[in-house]
Length: 153
Image 1 (cartoon, rainbow, N blue to C red):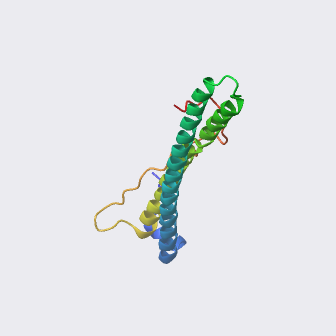
Image 2: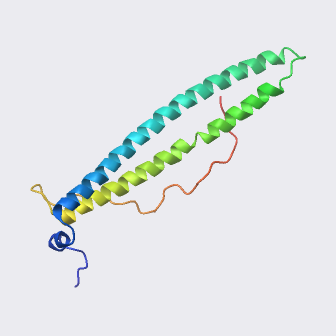
Image 3: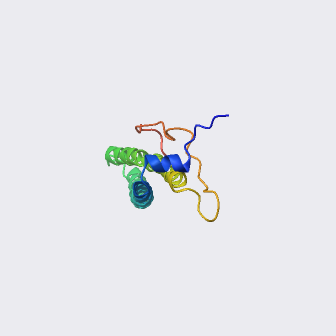
């Protein structure tokens, strides 16, 4: 039976140990940067959503007040609610972004772990554990947001 997987010895001849360690470090730094990016996206989205919900609630109150004033044109308030719904729809990118970031993190971690195992070998604790790489190339197939019906309340 032939084994086409590279051994630690053959990998070491292909890539110097220091270069492999440097590449692995860079992969882990990129992974950490993605984690920080995910946190920033989450914080920004939560803040924006809070403001959008607050503004839409106030517009809703103004619409209710406008109903008692028949002479008042309600169209601008109704249009403002439509714009709020469109803005909330656009904010749904956070969910897609979070999925992409998690996918990239798993892929980077897999590459870093494989590199460490193949070039540096197993450590004193035994065989290196490598998290499986994502099976699909992309967890999110959508590349744009379309307006849809959104319930703000």
